[in-house]
Amino acid sequence: MKLGAGLSLLAVAVATVVAGCPAPNPGNLFGGGGAGVTTSSTSSSGGGATTTSSSGTGMMCPAGQLDCGGTCADVKVDSNNCGSCGLKCPQGSTCQGGGCQCGTGLAMCADGCVDFQTSPTDCGSCGHACPPNHGCVAAQCGGCLPSATMCGADCVDTSTDPKNCGGCGAVCLSGLCASGMCTCPKPAETYCAGIGCANLKTDPASCGMCGQACPQGETCTGGMCSCPGSSMDCNGVCTPVLSDPANCGGCGNACDPGAVCKNGSCQCAAMTCQSPNLCTTLQDTPSDCGTCGVACTQDETCVGGMCVCRPALTNCNGVCTDTKHDLNNCGMCGNVCPGGGNPRCVDGMCQDTTCQALGRTYCNGGCFTAQQLQNDPLNCGMCGNVCQTNELCVQGNCQAYFPSPSCTSCPCGACDATTKCCMVFGTAICVSGGVCPP
Image 1 (spheres, one colour):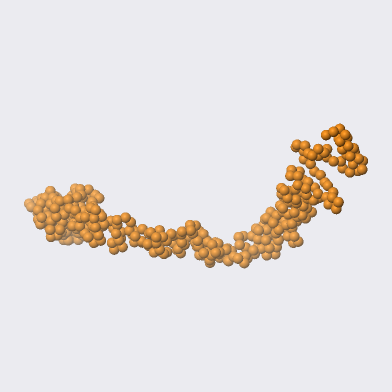
Image 2 (cartoon, rainbow, N blue to C red):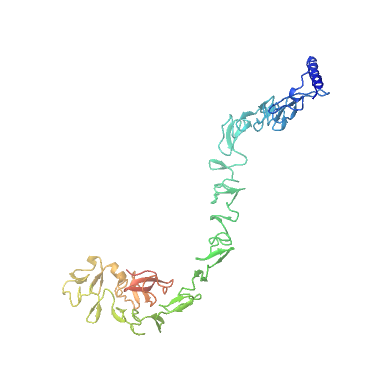
């Protein structure tokens, strides 16, 4: 700029001051306010309107308004910027003269403008809350709100209360209640009354519909019950037909006793004797001992292909004898209890007594305890009840059994659902009734 031009501008500035007008900002004389300088200015147009610029954005706002985040706000009446930028009035109040004010009959509390006469959260005074779902009448906590129901001594919202869902006492097992109906947390689940939440497509206890349970062992897929894997539904029970000797390869296809089911086919590890069919080694089968059709007597069993006395019996001159209770072989073969009085053989000892006096049962000269009658094959459950050759006395009942050449220990694949594998006579046998002898 030439010296003459600069002097001319200075003269204009001086003349303006003299005339009583504000002097131009020296920083703007040359088109800028200078770095880091915050300015505020007012200007007048020919119509007399005045504007104000707040610091930071350079926005020009009307007089009495502030630039609040890029928006001109009248902090005397703006409820979102009352008194200063960002000061928001509580709910229900308005900004008057730069301060938040409640309407007539209302008071300012932490949760906004409230009517002490009717507010259940500020009943009579700020912070005095009525019990849940109770109303406020004349500044006093009273009965239930119109939306609530009295259940016992409590006001409850039956549209959302899981303990009173849709009505007093209606409990949601899921713990969720919406619109008076019990609901479930997962979209795929259905609420079943008395049961709770269930996925009707996969829940075996509620398959396809609430409470419709699948038979034991079956799974629920797509709302339909089915047996898993290679098992089949045999009379309502999922059965492994590839290994079950009672349903080998199909329902009702039973293998011969002693045989096993492998891959749906009955197999005998030794030989099968006929009438009745029995898979055996002939070594431990009392009905086919040593040779098919050679049966041991009722007081014998088969060991190593030979008929021998049952356990607890002693061979006395070719007769299997119970030396604990036999008067003529009491304690040992040939030991005869003396006559006269009341001779009894009691646990292998001769005594002059009565079984009743001992709290026992008299049977053929011997005195038996109740427990002995539970396991004696010659007096099973009662005096004189003799078990058959292929039976054991179990809990006072004669139960059929059979050995299997495929098993020497339990579990045994030849035992089906109606028999139990038991270790007896030093080997594994399958006993009917599901209970092993002691």
